[in-house]
Image (cartoon, rainbow, N blue to C red; front, side, top):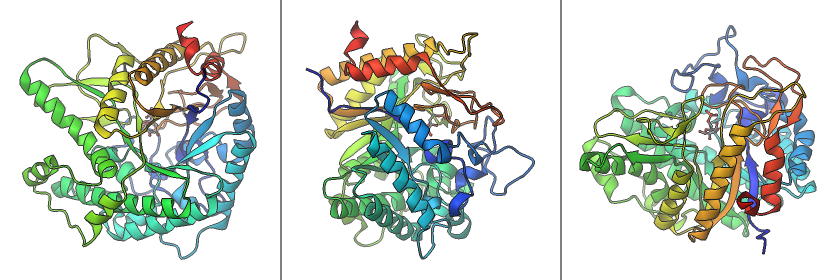
Amino acid sequence: MLDRSFLWGGAIAANQSEGAYREDGRGLAVSDYLPSAPDRIFNIRTQLDETLYYPYRYAIDFYHRYPEDIALLAKMEIRCLRMSISWSRIYPNGDDAQPNEKGLAYYEAVFQELQKHGIEPIVTISHFDMPMHLLTCYGGWKNHRLIDFFETYCKTIFARYKHYVRYWMGFNEINHIQTMPFIAGGILPDEEHRLQDIYQASHHMFVANALAVKHCHKMIPHAKMGCMIACGGIYPNSSRPEDVFETYQLKRRTYFYADVMMQGVYPTYSKRIFTEHDVRLKIQDGELALLRRYPCDYLAFSYYRSTNHQAGISIYGNTGGIMGIKNPYLRTSKWGWQIDELGFRLVLNELYDRYRKPLLVAENGFGTRDEVSEDGQIHDYERMDYLRCHVKMLMEARKDGVDVFGYTWWGIIDIVSAGTGEMEKRYGFIHVDADNEGKGSYKRTLKDSFYLYRDIIRSDGSCIDM
Ligand code: BGP
């Protein structure tokens, strides 16, 4: 019996797909300050340099092409599209007295187009593109004032879109604030007080998220509000107890964010982290009660790969999560991300055992180069292999008893890479003819993987076993 309720879908983000970065009143976002470069998410610039190329300015022009793109997604028979709203299209500076009507109207048109095709939107409220003005004028999430600005933004979009959207989530990969504080937390941490700034900003985001849960439930009674973490696999590099224990500690750095937002309390182990790193959180009256009263309804997470950790090595992370020591048992992508489908099943089981609430795979995908063959087709066998293996493990996790209600392939259509700003690191089942400098026809071409995913959706995953 096919489970028609399972939300097979795809995922994109506003800043990586829309372009039109100054159109219809959109304000500048933190993501607009990242030129294409391998280290761009770490080498932060707060000034624009017109001699550099900024890939998000045009991206794949989803802003204007969404009707055609959504029609192609409907042809793939996806049941949901995880997408984000660009905060600075709605409140260009983040602290504006009134919302930008053109921005509100744009997303209403996108939701109507999705509704026309029977595709359910799953909306990320802030996906690495906070209004830059909130950082330059207020210091970003380090400033308590951002809670009010975020609350106003949430109430505005809940009111306007309550008839179109029933699945929401607050911050994309909120735990990435630990390794990418600029795009994930909209802060420039003072290096001397790095962890103090990161955890204080995290606390403000937790409070803002709890208020979003409160207003979501009140304004859209049938809607669900989730939180979202990056959760790659992390294995101890040996059975040496130090490696095993420190790896567990490292996993807690990720779990911490879901612990607070799914369970509504600061976990007891966080006290030792704060003491050992001299973190003194400023918590205002009533905030802990708010967290306790408004935990999230589901947990969304991204999974791309796994890595090994050895006690004492320095921690490095990128958009795919923690990047530690290479695992000799795994294959590696052209971008150095190791392919571990069983790790995906493990993470699904671990997260469900820990939170006992519904899970959503909000990102799982394989970024690689595509070759357009003489017949104009794109036989993306590597990507199809990754998709088959990970869907197989998703089916196994569902048999393990994990309550996972959706799977949205990251980069359902080729879009700009978050980590490096490249188009050549392609994830999509639909090819977009654009290169790393934004040159090309922007023609859309269906890859072989497009048809494989459509079969997976039609068979609710069972075609994988055939
Ligand atoms: C996650 C982001 C996505 C996406 C993904 C893949 O961190 O939520 O925006 O980009 O990483 O990473 P990349 O695009 O760098 O390959």
